Image (cartoon, rainbow, N blue to C red; front, side):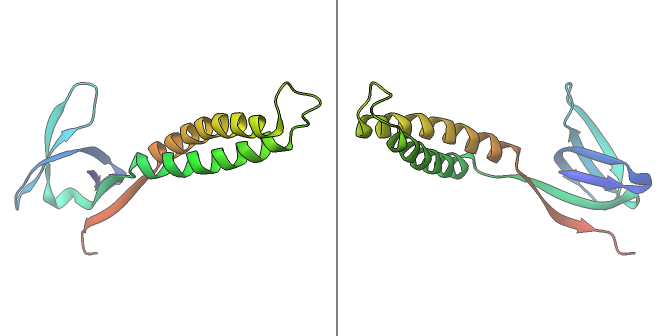
Length: 121
């Protein structure tokens, strides 16, 4: 959870308990710390959602394999030790690995904030 407080303070952590008086969070720090915040200080609460790593990896794998196959097929057989089809297979395999890695990294960096609560003005 991401809790925005008055005076532009922000707390990030796991929600432990909610009462009429406040929220209790286990803060996301090196050493886990639990803190309770007065509900009158809370301005907004967002849920932090991370994207599944599988879809980005598969999309990157497909794009990389296709791009690598095109690159491999475009190589001149006179200048390489591969036939055109072998170069396409090699390029596809290499491209698939690179594409999957890039897709995984991009998906891991993607975070969505979903508004759960907002105090009325």
